[in-house]
Image (cartoon, rainbow, N blue to C red; front, top):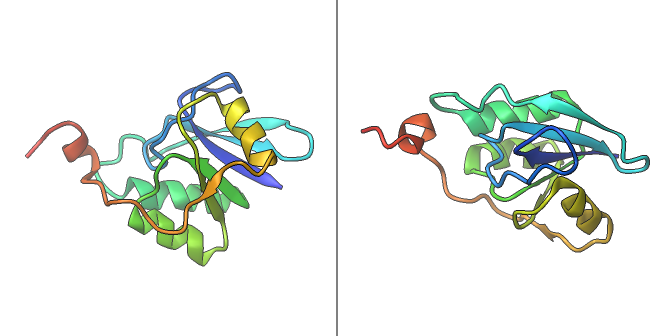
Length: 126
């Protein structure tokens, strides 16, 4: 099974990034071998629609589950329609998050979080 973890860096010691749509990258982890690859998040600096773009990137990578902190309504709708399970975790290292998932300790996200205002809101623009 291929699991995507939103990350702030490119190795298993990196911190989980709670922002799925605007994380630095995703670590795609094989649940059987723990081998992983880095998937750059092209939506990190998008002016809008980052969650949609990130969700589509994950679908294109054929992930079966996502571990993150929050997921907005547009990304949630895309992932849910594709049957991708989304799990919530607190900020910690990617490896610890993955181990918690394997142990069945993570909460399944059953509804989207609040919508974000894109890059403009993130940078305080009006």
